[in-house]
Length: 301
Image (tube, rainbow, N blue to C red; front, side, top):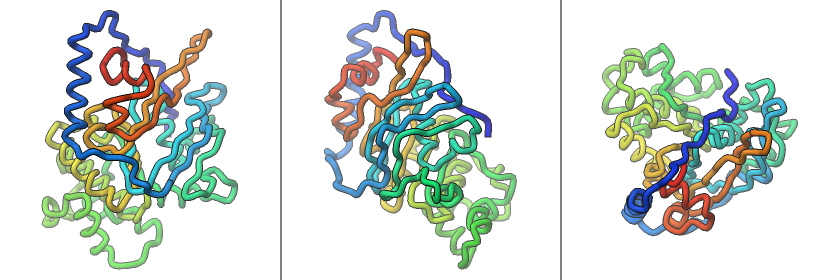
């Protein structure tokens, strides 16, 4: 896996944002939030506990001192400008950063109260329990059937594989579209179908959590809507953490939202940080931090 530290992209700052432009952006987001039912804290149990989580790539500090609780059966969105460490934090949840030789994680990250980075924790088992869907659909060059059963097979899962395929594809709302062509290549599907196939592949191993790194960034609006509807269905059975640059998507689907930004030191080093983490409708309609309000109204980002 190639190293993907926080990028060096510069924040795009609007030199002179007009009140009408920023007000319109804010109003549009408020409308999206208002279309959803009023939501408060669910009271669900904490599944991930982050305390002072800091990630380094060699001597480069990519993100610093993140403290938050992720709750079960909720969708949590990580938003913020490019280079703020969203994907870096996401990859900590299933220890994907372990595959980067220079990566180091400080602070604490617990999963159901267990230290995810404890000496006796098997990273392979972590990734079985915490599945991941990537930015671009990446089905294997295999049949649709073999894509779905790949994880269960290598994991030694027992049971009827046909049943696993059907159940996983039904949960990914793909079964009716592919049930008569399971032997055909997954690469022959459309982009949106490929991404739903990747979701089916991820849930075939019966994970507890689904991580999604900008899963709709390469999809058209119709396919994006299908994925968003699917996420809302899947949260009944899974905890979902999603990275997105699309604030309206975060407003539409997430229960809680974490806003990250970038600190720039005197020597020019850029480090991601968590600014605010709150129930989504509150964060978008009455954020407690000026930085959050400036971002969601388009003053920077």
